[in-house]
Image (cartoon, rainbow, N blue to C red):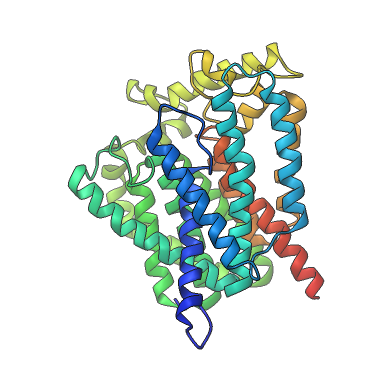
Length: 384
């Protein structure tokens, strides 16, 4: 995986690596401001991250991309969320969500687009995979020491769900790079990240990845049908290879709940996962029906029996009302329509992930690539 120009200028390579590291850290940290005075470690960590990102923008100012529509997104989303904040009973948590939705999304999209301008899209994807492989190695070492299969032990920076998102996203990018290059190393990396996702035992990323694969392959079928046939044969061969082990794997961990979900037959073991989510969705739906126009107020969902509904799109409807909920759905659908099939698949992936877990601040993943997808498509059309 080669990055940088042919001259291999060390300073340019260092700045590229630094930019992607900052992208990764910002995506998992979720913002650049801290609103809880009782958590001094988080305050210091986010201040350091804000300083590094600001310094990076200054040093690389000639290579930084500030699309107007990204700035427009920041201003509009900030204004709309502040309206919801006026009715919030937990201002600090509300500001935390605004930080994730507005500031993290804006900085993430600028970092990614700036790296694409510096390296090109293919090398940017490669660099992301390199950083994720490095983080995976560090995570393996950390988990081996503190509890390899214990989901209560963090996956270095994050819990199992968000780390499952990142592993699945990396697998999707690896597949795209293999299709582009036909190089075996991307098949190997794809397998590594796929196993990393299964290691987290998170169901949402697995479902989202399957849907994203379908979107990507559908787009690929229109341009390269022979490649789709090859992928189908490889998938079938892989399924035959692992099928003898699937009953033991699914029967021994949380992924077994997927089979229960498909059959709509649950056991007491599912209560902490699927059962709780169904209860959350019922409560969230009832809350929305009681306050459909303005919602219950930003971050006020936590004052009920659950902290958040584990569906970020539903959370917007509940806390901010139908108008804001429709804006969210329309923005995501518009982004899908205005993006290439690669970014369509990425947006769909994170949109589905957002439907299974996380609070509103996690929309930074989806919104970031909504903005990136729109920009990349508009740039390619201008080039034509």
